[in-house]
Image 1: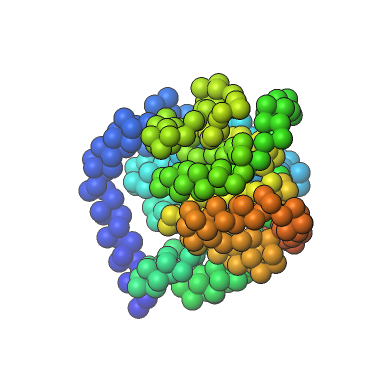
Image 2: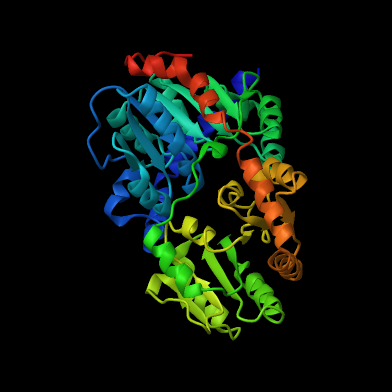
Length: 436
């Protein structure tokens, strides 16, 4: 009965997708006008390939945006080392992630935008790329895309699978449908114990947990010359960093800066927004509060009277983390689920975050229990915690050491995941597409 219900729901979804195609195209054009789509590669969103398919067997890896695609990089390296004959296609859905992949994908791997989940777009995508194996990172469940892959006999794996409490509560009302979708994956690897419980409760009885792939990511990089230049410019000024902030957080960071500056003369706050394109808006917002802002995107260097150094550039978060030992990780004082806490843990940071960490729930809980993370509730709490860490070197160094130790706690996760995927990758390398 559940299978019949799921098939009926998918049929309704597919029919709705056909009917909504004009609306979806209109929404894409609106996104294009707002700079949220790539005009030079817009056709890829409708399934029109931008480049030729590489010869030979091909593995397709999909991640929604920056975080998922960065998580995939160590896995890509492991696949290329063990299965050098496999070409790799990476798909994402955002302009920012596409820019990062252009910079960081190794030779033998190419990037395309994922097609919107319309039957015609998905069909064009599959007909051109003809993957031999598909890997979805975290939680991108596009029914038409997944069904089109399975209809072609393409084996699918869900890696670093994530199912937050909020998503679980929503999907539980549609258990036959989500159970059907999860059943399309022959391999499901959850990133935490909570995710594993949620996925199994929704029908993925074959799911297992080998660890969180984000632990396998190498430390974020930084240009040595730029780092030396900024370290010289900042000198011995007291400073802290607000990283990956979202709308609504910059004003809270500004309030914390004002409070901190009263007791820390010469304080500099480094601020890296999650989306660099918001730089101009953020600078105007901070200037309206009487703060002196220097924008990196405009080539402005911090001077002695700079209050906020706004690093509104792409791909330089590793540089910012190396400039300050006290770090607040954003997306957590506003209900965005939080950003990656492991990145600063690998770069000698004493880490603060807000209460909203659903995207990294188990990581944040375990880090806090290990003394590697401190939660704050608001701007006043942020200022208080940052002040303590700036003033108490012993407490700061203890948090940094605890964070570094925690970041190494799942060092074997990449090998474990690669081993779990090995049978499917062996089949893919032979160009043998098999069903489940």
